[in-house]
Length: 451
Image 1 (cartoon, rainbow, N blue to C red):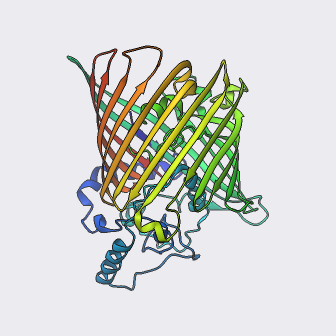
Image 2 (cartoon, rainbow, N blue to C red):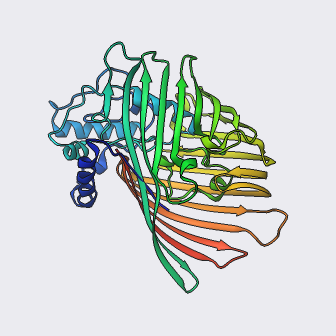
Image 3 (cartoon, one colour):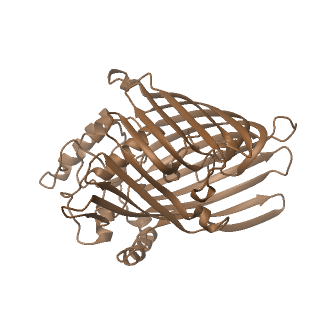
């Protein structure tokens, strides 16, 4: 189990070596002032310029330059924002789609450059964890001259990896796992309503290499207000966690229902809408899970979220998301999966519950005709913008027609967001309780680097 990805290009290797040294020394060089930056992350924060911030969006064309202000003034200003903006930075998957391309489309021409690349990383104040941030976004972004159909591109890389110890009875084993290594590009055309994303997985540890080589390949249109139309190969919204980007997962591994029923990408056309009290994600496409799969059958995915506290006046009570969806199609068999979700976050607290039932399914572990079901309950507490304690109870019944085959996982973990999701360390302990096989324990240390 792991997390890591890196980018390789002409500049990339030199910076990757420096970044490796940074990982070793960061734990000894971070000071307490960094741990006191923002406690909360709601919409107000997105509209409030922050000094030296390289990821937060503002309504202006440039970020604040607070270099003339004293450190004492900055500290007082940050504390005032802490008291006003205590909402945790948790957004649902539909909002993620909007925020992801909003962050890419933001120009950071006026961000103050540090003397060195490592200096830029150390001095950046990346605190958001609900969307991925990239350490070298400004250096790996290129704008084309007039006359080119492409306006701007941003190269990026992700590396996620982990080392885990597994205790199973009297047997103990330690293994390193490369979860994924991804290299990609995000871009926009001269027509501002069109953007694209393309990425590959150059290093793989299992399965058919060509099946899994392409990770993303899609075009986004934003010409309809409050909507995105996505066409191509992208992540399917099967369940809330099953449709979440791997770069913002709270744990090293997904819950059992997420990895069995979801965590797949498909060739499809999606219509995504995002409003104050409601958002949705509907798609139709192939039931194949790779670009090379062809068209083994058709598939429909639908997901709707209700946000009863979506207005500004109710924001002080926290954020509530009530969602549900259905995934159905044909791939060798007819299958259908129904999912419900309830999430709540307020100040430093984040918690949710998700349950799913299937009459056949087509998730990341393959097609199954079994009637299965399960649930996952998660809670998290963010002590500072950099430290989070999380826990999860997770149950899966792989076949409701068979007795005594339940699988339960109890997970406790700590997230150290050194630089948001761009530089992150995760420690998870998992107790696996199985009715049909011996119980086991796992201790997993994972890292994530986004450049």
